[in-house]
Image 1 (cartoon, rainbow, N blue to C red):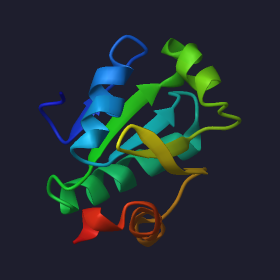
Image 2: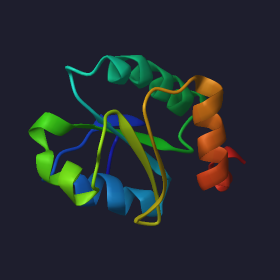
Image 3: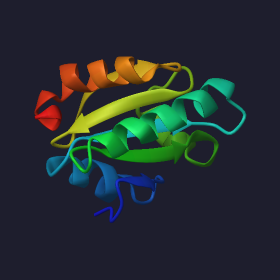
Image 4: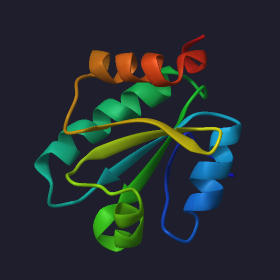
Length: 116
């Protein structure tokens, strides 16, 4: 289980850190790449929203160049892509940079209990 609200995940620990952890708290997964400008815009937004929710949701960061099998497993077509997992299953996703209110709305639609 993750010991922090924001953590890195890889192909080797994705099942434990994301899928299993999502049975306790929703987990946003940020699939990003270093060469991707929208990824660098979105990361601080996701971190701010995660910290504001103070443990009600977790943020896993997956660098896609080092974890291509995960990108393939979830059929990612562009970056950044954010997938929300609740109880071990995907409940929603979006691609591209978003502003803070848009990320909060996404969470409220796909994991409303996290905002209570």
